[in-house]
Image (cartoon, rainbow, N blue to C red; front, top):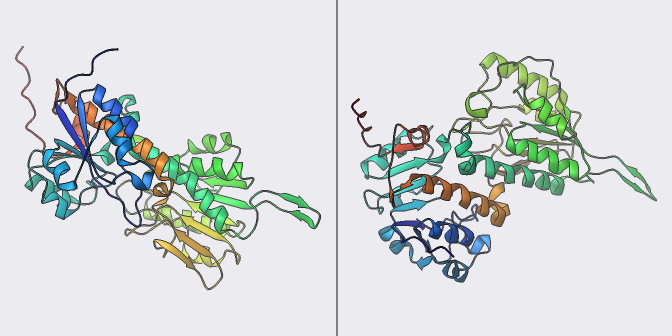
Length: 381
């Protein structure tokens, strides 16, 4: 057996669990993996409990189980499910690296605060997912996959009838008609899960390439009679529609939605206000007992007009579930995937036994959002 390299980089993870969050950014398997790469892992006591990992599990894998203050004081880099609070940023020593979803698209003040604190910020939301070398680092893809799976289960649980067709002695019950709006990673997982539960599934997305993906899963593609032939944006994400395009889409979706029992919306434009796909008029047009799960609901709004985080029931008897934290409800699997994403981002920046940045390297240039060093001068010919 090859000897483990001498550890030179200390990687710390804190307990981020709350009423909404059960995930952890480090799992015992990843501790073992990082040790072999010469990285020592530090974890706050209790950080993995909500994801079903004990302190003993981490200790056996080779991690140091410490208090939060000790982790912050000793770590060269800290990994997060989300990002450190302003209070925590004030405690982090200058020169520390912070890896997570830092909100660099919309929160310039937060990034400026990291800069002022002397922290190197690695924003996973900036990952150029078209790079093959970045696929294993793509937290958005891994967590959206979990979210889409859970969204279908949440919808089935809230719906007052069966998802599959059932033939009983008392008669035949028709299958639920499910509409998925947004056929990205989360949407495709929601399609596959709803189909496995026996529902008749239809889906829609503005990206032209999505039709083949939807149909390959056995779902129907919703034809709105509109042409958004340039719906594909950079990096594989859907682009934001023009106001005219969005109005036309909303009117068409509102009209078609009335024929469905369950609607799951998953359309996000990373770091920006999500598009409204279903207006209040569309919600009011649904039959009593219909269920909507809005995965894009947040403080920025959601895909459903007026949706908020949590569950509400309209005067017309439609249940609207604003559910941005669904990945956290599958905490063990979601943590396994997320920990791999964060660890691979960390490992990318460990060069010759230390953390370093090369802004001439595309991935480095994209991910470093705070504490950017001056680019190295080109070598003389």
